Image (cartoon, rainbow, N blue to C red; front, side, top):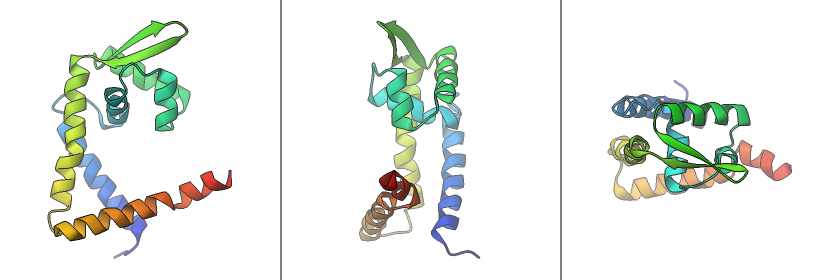
Amino acid sequence: MFHTLAYYNTVLHRAFTAYTAERLGQVGLPFGLLFPVIYVGKHPGCTQAELTKALGLDWGYSQRCVVKLTEESFLRREKQGRAYHLSLLPRGEEAFALGHQVFFDWDRQALAALTGDEQTQLLHLLTKIAGHGPSNERKEKS
């Protein structure tokens, strides 16, 4: 079997995605729309441009996400001046709370085999890697 960070990253991503999709199904939110809901939940009144930039989305994909979330009654999109501002509707608040909690619940399950010190060490090392990975090297060279 492979013993690389890339392999384990893929395994963990698949497990997290499956777990999260199942949990989000309770409120009818597809996994792909989780991060826009979380962003708006943490930044009520943000503009669509702010959401797009913060999540690193292209404008077309962002537009489709916002339209879908608006049509499905997760988001309110209100024009104020020249920009559209976003806020969560009650269904979006429910999805935000559940989506936010999913991260903590999955971590608790995934890290259960580790001691508290091992969990702290793992998260510390992953933080170091995340700050110095290939995608960050490209940003630093730009």
